[in-house]
Length: 313
Image (tube, rainbow, N blue to C red; front, side):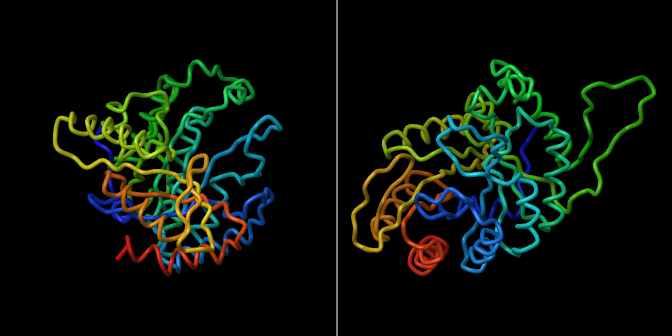
């Protein structure tokens, strides 16, 4: 099944260019309780400042054993609020846990956000990386690869250009089902992480592949693997490559970049150089997970004034 592209994912992913987005919630370093009314205000600010995408995570359960103590809103509730308070910026899930939710429920949520946002939604999908959660939801973590593939196919059918519902079971005489209202545009589907699948499987079905930041040499190797999979497609096609990156933006614009887990601490000049290198290596989008002692608005405004123009033109 050929993946669907729309104007909104072309705004985020374009050949030879790099766009910049933000991952919610937007918090100062060490802050673990989010004021989500403020988050919606910050999302509106990101829209006004020219960031290209807002990414929302799906964290079903929390545990004292997990490294992320932040309490995340249900993604569909938050995406609905974002759709109502923004006008231009792309909204993306990064990522809905495809294996722990019924695909028809995901399709209903995705179509609803696409309708509320007037076609600005991209559906990022992952398999989840916390095996204890599978047991909590009555699933076996060893089945996640098969669940991911089966649920993806059901979703792609429900959200495609000619949408149709594929029931899990079909009783004799059962009616044909449909999902209404039909959104103004099909919903682009994006793989976030591998979901236990090969890059060839992802390249055939997804508009692109989002992954976590890694050191430059490792990232270049992953991108080369991705490009090889795209080149093996039966017909020439564009497939996006994106990265989620942690950023501690220094208040000294000349501070050199220093590696952090999943990102960098850097002044803006070193950040621009690192993003230039990522673009030249084939990355099409970077979503920044801000992690600084500086006020979030201050960091956003510096990025908008001094970094975004270099890439968004």
